[in-house]
Length: 210
Ligand SMILES: [Ca+2]
Ligand SMILES: [Ca+2]
Image (cartoon, rainbow, N blue to C red; front, side, top):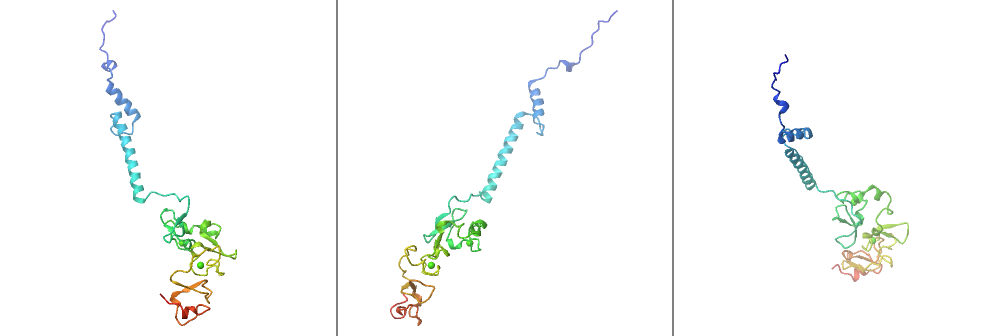
């Protein structure tokens, strides 16, 4: 006779899965790197907080070391003497042109001594910083123009329509100098020093040192 005895079925086969347990299993599958691996919200929060921490660290480092600045689009600026100057990469420092390519780093970044600019003078210089002398083979930086000194060698940087210099200042005596280094005037400090500096001797007989 065939037995009609029935055996109790395994409880696990009929066990219903609660929603929270399903979420935990799903979370473990997607966020296996989470140590707790308990809830999806914990995983997401951890990732967001990590991202915010990395961003804050980057901002702090940039503020501490300084945010890198791009070279200025234009190098034109005015010096403290109201002359044409060269603007450094910091966009603050304005150098007199004669400090360019002199072998000394005057810009914080060294832009005044850049290999490209200094490799072909004056062609690679900003054109507004160059003065062409009467002899086209010679040139000077514009801050050497109208400084009472014969930098061009023919006084074209101190005299003539291209230089367009103002009269000699109060610290200078107007005359025709005997020395090659001057053009239209001599320093008043040379007046009545017992030595001829002007062709007409006015520096010894008319000029006063103050
Ligand atoms: Ca320099
Ligand atoms: Ca000069």
